[in-house]
Amino acid sequence: MLDTGIDGSHEDLAGKVVPGVTISSGAVVAGSDGLTDPNGHGTALAGIAGATTGNDLGIAGVGYDDGISVMPVTVLAADGTGTDADIIAGVEYAIAQGADVILMGFSNPGFSQALQDAVDAAWASGAVIIAATGNDYSSTPTYPAGMAAVIGVSSTDQNDALAGSSNYGDTVFIGAPGVSIDTLTAGGGYGTISGTSASAAEVAGVAALVMANDSSATNGQIVYRLGANAVDAGTVAQTGNGRLNLNNALSDTSTDSTMPAIVPSATPVEAPYVVGAGGSY
Image (cartoon, rainbow, N blue to C red; front, side, top):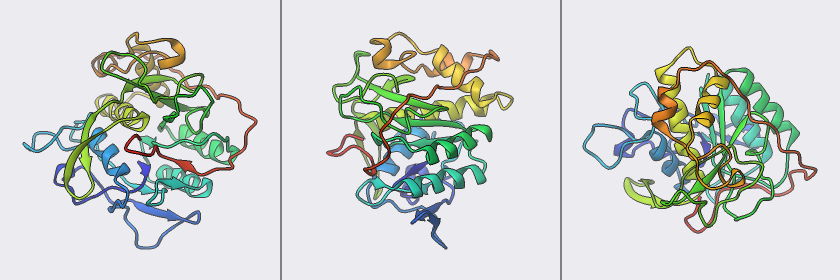
């Protein structure tokens, strides 16, 4: 999980979080483990994807299998912003650790070829890569969601309609619920969040769960199962292949494979990558 870190002391993440690292100025910070979260964003996504199941506490994460763990790779500052160099180094670190799923719950309107190269290497390593499309109710492409090999995720509401703040358009591969999602807060609490980052965390949890239950499946097969088994919701521009369905994806044993295509952009990275503000991630 490339994000703001994770509160590793949260009781509902016991046994689910493994030490990671903090990246700064494009390099690993010596002695860091990523197990603190001054922002709360990373902890919220970790709860959605992997909160402990069967402990009579709080919530159960989407990826509820005992074999699934979450590793924090802190690439965003306390204000929720990050640089291209740090995110590239974070992807490279995740590859080196053998990550099966890489979640990036942030967006940028600019395209980075250097980050695309890192993502290509992650795909070649067998990882499923997932990113939030952003919360500007815009069809303008954002990245890394619009990069080749990345599952771009939009947010849907309780009526299977596009959430009011969610981005949409060519970068969307799949939609997932993202309004008032129960999760964890840094410092040991519980709360709700809304936005495409929450939706992306659900997709990451499902991808991990499918992989845990079929170790022979390739990343391309996992991506195919997620998209092919999504249910109709909204338009193609709003949810891509449809709204995420865990049961359908988990039951699929097909060997068909696919890789998300790149969404072209002539805009280079100029602004920082950022998570949503005002409680919407």
